[in-house]
Length: 248
Image 1 (cartoon, rainbow, N blue to C red):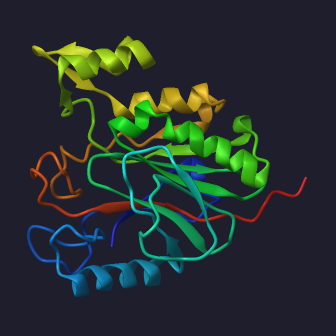
Image 2: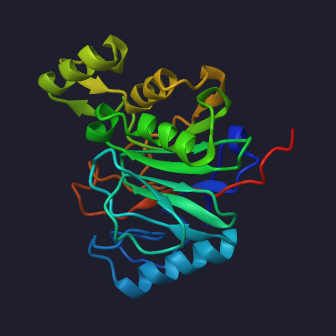
């Protein structure tokens, strides 16, 4: 099993899975962690069991709907409740989101140890779901935005994410010209930068945000990609669990 990580979040148990190291067959090979995508349920369950064994964590998941709702998880569980961001304050319980081109954003508060995992597609990015997650950490754990650390994980990059002129214009008007620059007769949307801007507008410092810069569409051996595979593919996850709070 291959897990990617962020140097900024080293104090937090966390990771971004790849498609490597599981039991699923084609076209979901091999570490598919997404249900309801056509894969055999026993294979998906075996993949989750392997992830639990590899990390020593339990996982709190939600049924993602491309919105901006944030929930606080108290117990591990399957994705039943509709939301696109999950807060955890319980050690050993990882907030978790599933992606296959959308952006996974992991945020941790070193002072309280509280964490949140965010799923941000283009709709969620425009809805500023990452900013809603920052606010939720403030309500739940007293986190101050300037103290937070964030990692923007593997997602479809501006190299591959061509969008309509109308959608590009919406993003430029809302988040600035650089997030949807015209390129090659079309417009390429940079969801990494867009979510970085959302986080900075929410009060995070630029030096406390890491962008991994891995494009899911560019790396078929490493990642599932909804766009590249025209919807018939698996899901990788981003997860983060609380760390012990800092003692000042």
